[in-house]
Image: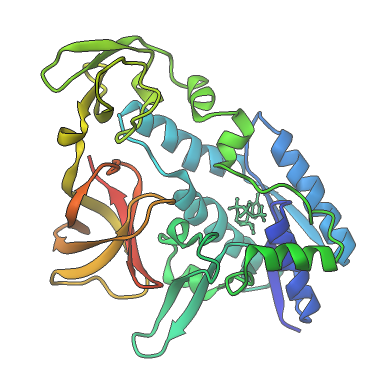
Amino acid sequence: MNKVVVGLSGGVDSSVAAAVLHHQGYEVIGLTLWLMKGKGQCCSEGMVDAAFICEQLGIPHHIVDSRDVFQANIVNYLVSGYEAGITPLPCSQCNRAVKFGPMLNYARQELGCDRIATGHYARIRYDEISQRYQLLRAIDRNKDQSYFLYDLSQEMLAGTVFPLGDQTKEDTRRIAAEFDLKTASKPESQDLCLIEAHGSMKTFLDQYIHQKEGDIVDLEGKVLGKHQGIHHYTIGQRKGLGVAAPEPLYVVKLDPIMNQVIVANRANAGRSDCTVTRLNWVSIAAPSTPIRVETQIRYRSSAVPVDLIPLEDNRVKLVFDEPEFGITPGQAAVFYDGEILLGGGIIEL
Ligand SMILES: Nc1ncnc2c1ncn2[C@@H]1O[C@H](COP(=O)(O)OP(=O)(O)OP(=O)(O)O)[C@@H](O)[C@H]1O
């Protein structure tokens, strides 16, 4: 029988992924990674709900203590990034280093199985011509999570199934109700798991980074206000600056050495290019000449047309048609051709 290990968070999506595969006749094994140290409530709730689903489906459930891996790859990565004045994207890093890689290893080594499934909304297909596993946006564009998956390797994609990529969230809820799954009406997680667990990114970071008062200044260095730590700000941020000004101001730079937040008006806040590093090419091989692609620079932003110019050291330069206001170092720039995710990388300072 075909065996598959399903990553179960205790949410409705992964419960339905497991139920559907089980219904299709796969031998399904549930696997929950215990991720967060300390703030355990959401993790323990998730583990209990996942265990309940496995009991309901009559399948085995494994829990793997991954707290050290999560701490090293996500918590430390976030803290050092925010201290340096960038805004790291934890989810793509988590998918590669904490979830897909370790889950596939565990499946192979402990369970004799070479395939995993998750409840992500995205699609994978093998392209005979390029001989690559390609990543596609989900059918439900509102739920599409491909942006967070750009850093998966070919080997990871080869061993992964996304049973929900071809259906809508409404389909998922309906299937959950049909199977009478305990998680059917569980509310949707709205944010990063770390934010859900700690209330806000600020509360989470304040545990690790001491508050240190500094100046909010304009491009000429004029002091406009005070801040309690540059890690409370993100480049491109407009709201919540705590500065009274006649026109909207945007954060354009975070200076860890001077401990300053630098702001500018809209006319001076846009940028027309940026460089992207640590690239991972998914659906195509790394281009050697400039290409025209669409780029998404935030999970919830639309993809916009850019010229992508290859540089040395696994980097590219992106030239936008129109100035962009949310180019945030540390976040991912993910390249698409229509529904096909070509690749992506991390926006540099
Ligand atoms: N702690 C975990 N252990 C194992 N797999 C996980 C864990 N957390 C998430 N996953 C897998 O990654 C997928 C996407 O996770 P994400 O945190 O984005 O949750 P989600 O989209 O709200 O899905 P769900 O409703 O299943 O929680 C999940 O559907 C699940 O398959």
